[in-house]
Length: 174
Length: 201
Image (tube, rainbow over all chains, first blue to last red; front, side):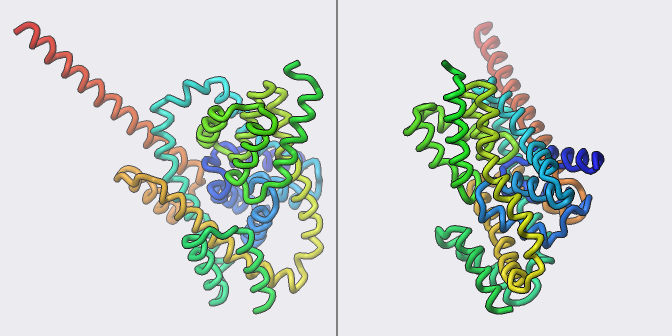
């Protein structure tokens, strides 16, 4: 048990530390850790992303809470893992708050951020590709995915509404 | 005065409220935070608020949590940052814990399975959309286009940890910055050299 707690905490600390761009950008990091240790199946992982989307709070934090509980059935472990994923933010933001002016005008940091952004987009797309296998299994699921992308690109629809509609759709056609 | 328990408690309630009612993650929290911190409580002025949005996005981690920690620290120092982080994360902690417990009992239900089967492709669609949407806001110069291509190619072929791909991008940014710095120095040196020649002539 102590070994599991340490592995979980290190893993989620790493996710917090490299999770530039927040939410979706952290999915590929999460997925890698989950795959390595087998804490969740990819199907469960997509489910937790959907749950995270429909409930308040950040995806990475919600995943930390969920994985912590699922793998140990202990609320304490769940709390520790949640803290581990927030810890890097906490340390870095406090540092940042003290060097606020310097960081704001630093050309070096601006350049780095400019390069991190395309990498983050690449990671988001990679995360999506790797979830296709467990999520798009037949023609209706393929159509759902395509429709969601199209609707989001063309209109200003709430993602939660699309998840709910897709869920109802799933209940009726299967 | 600055750190009275009353104020910290009020902060905790405010952050807890924001954490409880904000669906859809980080960016959705911004207008709610603005209303609470700038208009209702007067804890932060508007300019600082706008600055904080851009600056907390440069730090890894959830935008909502980063912003909360930043504002908490600005309002009441270290204790404020701690109260803000706990306040903002606690609601989702309870909600997810409840779901995790309930989920275990319901995940085998046929209807739940079918609903999830419909939801999964929607989530994949939303993730792809998130990537496409972000791509709109980037000025695609060749080095940046090269960076995303390399990230996708390496990601697809090697089972490398995404953290290394982020480090690679940081390395590219550093090289680009140093190169520009070097170029600027060269230009300045040339100008100074010509100035010297001019004055000597």
